[in-house]
Length: 41
Image (cartoon, rainbow, N blue to C red; front, side, top):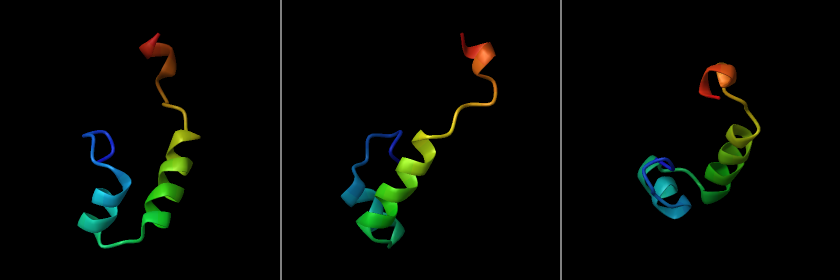
């Protein structure tokens, strides 16, 4: 949903979870690197 431009509040409301949960999951995702990063360059 964050890829589609939905904000943290919108995402939390749609999924029925807290804003804190959304933020913590987005932080986890930002620390991951794509597996095919060499192909993207």
